[in-house]
Amino acid sequence: MRAWTPARVADAAGARLLGDRGGAPEGPTRAAIDSRALEGGELFVGLPGTRTDGGAHASEALAAGAWGVLVAPPHAAPLAGEGVVLEHDDPLRGMQALARAWRAELGSGGARVVAITGSTGKTSTKDILAALLRPHLRTASSAENQNTEIGLPLALLAAPARTQALVLEMAMRGPGQIAELVEIARPDVGAIVNVGPVHLELLGSLEAIAAAKAELIAGLPGGATIVIPAREPLLQAHLRDDLRVVTFGEGGDVELVRCGGAGEVQVRAGGRVLELKPSFHERHNLLNLLAGVACARALGVEPEGPLDVGFSAMRGERLQTDGGVVIINDCYNANPMSMRAAIDDLAATAPGRRVAVLGDMLELGPQAPELHRQLGEHAARRGVDLLVTVGPLAENMLASFAGEARAVADADAAAGVLGGLLRSGDTVLVKGSRGIALERVAEALGARREAPRAGARASAAAPAAGARRG
Image (cartoon, rainbow, N blue to C red):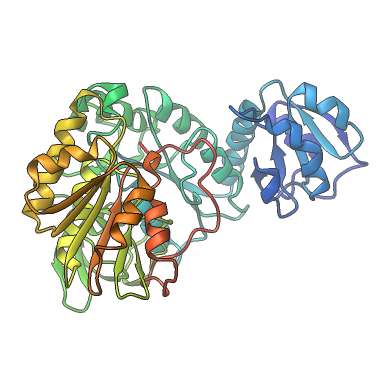
């Protein structure tokens, strides 16, 4: 938006321009909603929240170097004359309208948008796809988990003017939410990574979850490409004849045909065999890689060679403690699908004792106790040596786990118990729903940590406001 004048920004947002301090020389670099994290040049959007009203910090934002502010009338009037002030009755709607306008501007320059959703793995798939595209196209992607009605517009508005490919993540917690995001982003390619028992408490059934995810299919323009898992019956009723459907996974249009001993993988796609050397090896991420390859090919990119992926924080991040313990920091969120995948990875990669610190999986409704019990059974079957459950729901895992186990109430208690149980050579998986805050366990165990494995990166910022995980 650097070439846009204040008047054009205001018009695109549907806002009233109260003042521009004599005319700003150029437009904003991006939008921001946290006045404490400004670098200079942003359009600060003052959103009302449950604990504070962001508009109350608009003056601080201008003083910190914001290009201008987009705020509600009570906050706008006192700022007239202090800088670029855009007044809107609903600042969030104004930011979303601005994002739509910027999406149209990017599209006029040839940019194409890929939208990724799914019950689990969508952030990792987004990270993988962005890495696949960057050697070939000027690529931008959602930062961390900017995947909501707040985060997605922020990601869109951060895309540079000459972007050729924009990879966006879309989260869902109920009907209509994916449709809202699709209307803003207008993707050219869509991907539904999977459909699983996430947000059952709200939606009630897997069929309802699939229907909510399939709003992405409904919102694509004719002739677009939709990427879906091979043999996923829950999505079949939602497919459209005017879309190009590409499947991935075993028996799909894009499938894994070989994993080499040195980390090389071969992927069959479109009659070709692509050779890649990813910086990861987890089975679930190799499946995410197939979805990424399918999306890349829909944009005309045939990826091959080394693939170094910087995954978003707390998603399978491997850390080493001074005591010789490996921590798999996968505590950003959890559901039955991702829990099973993480346990499988622990079983496949731990050279010594396998320790699992598993917290409550939230929003599963009446099926929650049984789903937790099944995970305890899975952990036993996959050879977990020590299981520490965190929270009342996770304690149900112990009913089907016969090995060494402890049940604790919260993350701090888990950290305390583990201090006396771990020994050099252990590999510890730490995973649970976001509300359990198991990052405290990972921090306590890895207070002095070595550099993470290749392809991992540390987070420099907290998750976006309003972020969802579904």
